[in-house]
Amino acid sequence: MALTSRGLSYIWGALDGEMAVKIALVSLGIGITLIFAVELLLRLIFGFGNPLIYLPDREIGYLLAPSQRLRRFGNLIEINQYSMRGPEVAPQPAPGSMRVLLLGDSVANGGWWTDGEEIISALMAKKLSTSDAAVEVLNASANSWGPRNQLAFVRRFGTFGARTLVLLLNTDDLFAGPPSSVVVGRSRFYPARKPGGAIAEVLSRYLFPSPEEPSLPKETGDIVGYNLEAIRQLQQLARSANSQFLLAITPLQRETSPTGSRDYELRARERLHQFTQQQQIPYLDLLSAFQTHTAPAILYRDHIHLSSQGNQVVSEAICKALQHLF
Image (cartoon, helix red, strand yellow):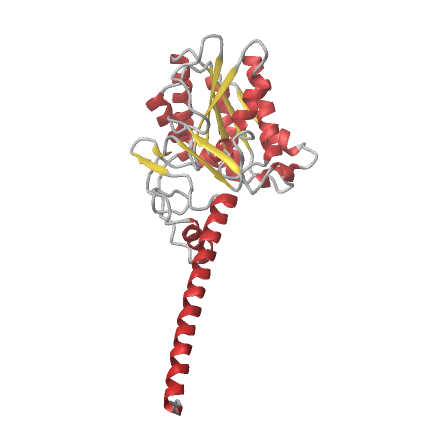
């Protein structure tokens, strides 16, 4: 029986409908596959979707969550059981070994941009260790910590049997505020939980409008003086633990340029210098070493954080100072 034009139209319409469904399903499958591929590549190559997590703390302000191990942009980052940058450690050093406890902020920590073998504490351990004696350099640090955060950490956890405590500051730390946890979970730089995935992290960090950063509590009075007092108390804790104490400070990048330090920074640095003399604290100011370097700019990755070359300069200078103390 011959098909009518209406019958042919019905058949072609059904075929077109099936084809459209197949095309839609294939397109959907390709789209899902691409999404999974992008997610996998962002995780494996860049480490997105797995940032370091922070914990709020009433006394310390915040800590890196303990026992984390991840890679970001190819760099290995380990946080041990005491929220320190580095592998797991025993509460006390092994017989015949020696420990140094490095306290600091993001300069000492190295952040996501520095592999675990290139952070200052790891470089120090390599330089100080000999065939006769191993030296552990523990790294208690976190982004934007100041002297009062570091003091609270030592009060909480102790000195871990360290022979020497090294407090590594930068010029900005002289103006650091009191410990506060307001940024944890509210700033993209201090996440309190993992994001929904690598794509979700990229979108929130680079494509979506930045959320308003929380305001830190404002402090009045002699802020530099408050931080000097925290340094004095750290020195006392070191003495009570039969440990030596060394204070080192790195400059901001512009302080190595012809423009130099600003007036308020010069005044604060002079106060720090006089304070270390009064308290008889061994003091290592790295400003001169950075200024006289053949190319000071290569020591930095931004205005404050150091490159691998900068970490080398700092670790070598601290090790020389420690060898004099030892």
